[in-house]
Image 1 (tube, rainbow, N blue to C red):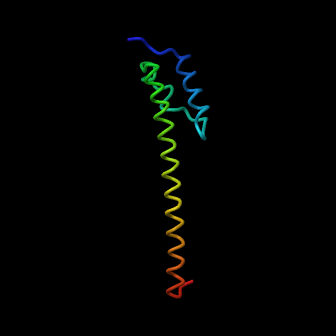
Image 2 (cartoon, rainbow, N blue to C red):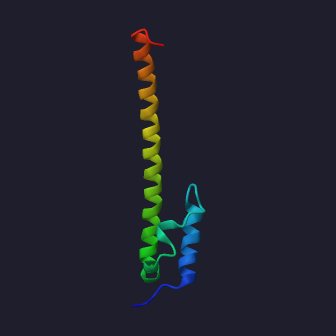
Image 3 (cartoon, rainbow, N blue to C red):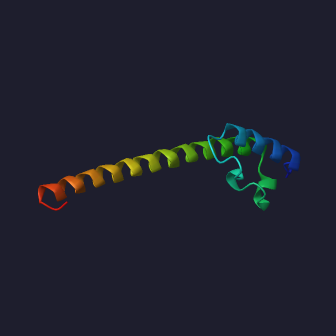
Length: 86
């Protein structure tokens, strides 16, 4: 089995980090882990796409949770005002 060179791994990681919306200091998808030396170039490209998608979905989920919390806070305040508690 052909091993992926360290230079190829670093180049792909740099490309992924340049495309990431935030936190470029974090290593994408386990870079440096022993298994990365056995992944093919195609697998790294797929990992890069998956990593970006996961980050976007996590960011969207966090945004939805923040919005839900804001709605709950407003509703609690209205409920307290309606019952005479301020």
